[in-house]
Amino acid sequence: MHIEHYAEFIVLTEELNFHTAAERLHISQSALSKHIAELERHHHVQLLERDRSSVRLTAKGAVFLEQAAKISDLHAELVRLFDTSGDADRPLYIAGVMDNPIDYPLVSRSFDHCRENGLDRLPVFLPCESVSIEDQADLLRRGEADCSLIFTSEHLVDSLAEQGEFATRKIYRIPMDAVVSTDHPLAKHASLSLEDLANETIIRPVGPRFTTVCEAFDEQLVFAGVNASRKLITAASSYDQVTADPKGAILPVQRTSRFAAPMQNSNAVRIPIKDDRLALQLTAIYPIGMLSRKLEVFFDSLEKTYREGYEA
Image 1 (cartoon, rainbow, N blue to C red):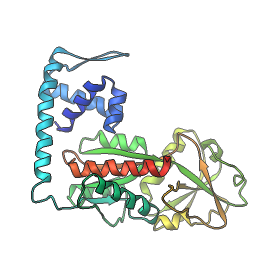
Image 2: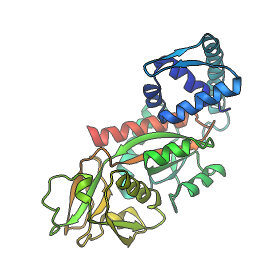
Image 3: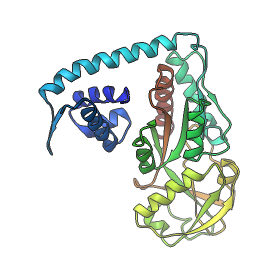
């Protein structure tokens, strides 16, 4: 039984709504429901009564809530104790996708927010060789990183959280653009939807940095029922990707935030894909039970930075 499940139960009793509670907790509704069921199974007690329109505490659930609050408070106190121990000066070590030029301005701005919220030692971003979920999970298991940041789909994030080894925090859903050559039939469009990509040729970067991004993009096309052919290009970095010449095909790229200068080939144009079904989910993955105050401050700061960069 994971300690986070008690805190999730407390949030659920405050909201009495699985959807809004899951949003507050940055997890999927199905993951929250599974965790509550695990609590009930572990303690052999029914905590909630549920129907289609409401969620209510049972009498035993109300008693359980008092004890869950004590357990959660004790855990928080232990976290504070260790945060002020000999490891207090140790920085956070962050693995994953945040070591490329597109994200440098966002990282810099997030550091400002970290300082404003009392994080004395700024996080250290580790060099990234592969962003596959398996490779990033191995880094976390070995204790080489406190968390990993990856771009992936909602479905992959939810399936990872439900495995029980790692917790996840959804940071931001980043919109995407299509880069096309100036003579492409879509070049004159002000914006695109997923249907505009049907029967087109989509460029897929091949390289260890693009595994999860490509899987997420392909998955969202499949869910939308969009058929498209693929054109493979070799890319060692995000710079190689966004400066590639599309040559009659469509190159999907992460939209540039207001903190970063656009990067693209001079013979191509960027067109926003304005479709709620398509976005890159920036997600933090960390071992269950290892959510420290420092990590929470970092997550909150990063989320605030992305909202400023894309919504302000």
